[in-house]
Length: 162
Image (tube, rainbow, N blue to C red):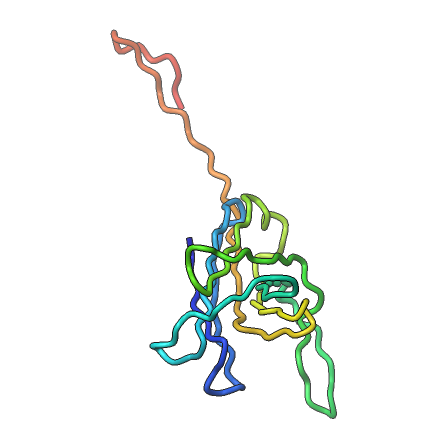
């Protein structure tokens, strides 16, 4: 299980924490995200009030193939459409924590390099704040061929030679 700790309030609105992931395309992923009140090292976990329209944490993933646009002569990069997203579940045993459980093979057919973001939603997703973003590298499974070894009988007769 991987755990990210991300602040809700940041000392600078220009800084969004970056967290990177390296996973295998065939593996399952268990991600736990602890949201603390601020980026102070002694900050307490954020209180998650449930109920209708209560907070939710969404994980978005999109391919890292930038599409360039121009705004008043200055380029900026648009990430395009998400290829996968999921809502985390509130962990009742850990204050301020959302858990994501992704089954094995979910990322088998997506690009090897993707971007992701964690967005906190509340007020029935009418209000959203990006808490963290990063790069996700997906390792493709290597095909290995195991060479058979020679099978030898008790009298040292070889049955199969590699």
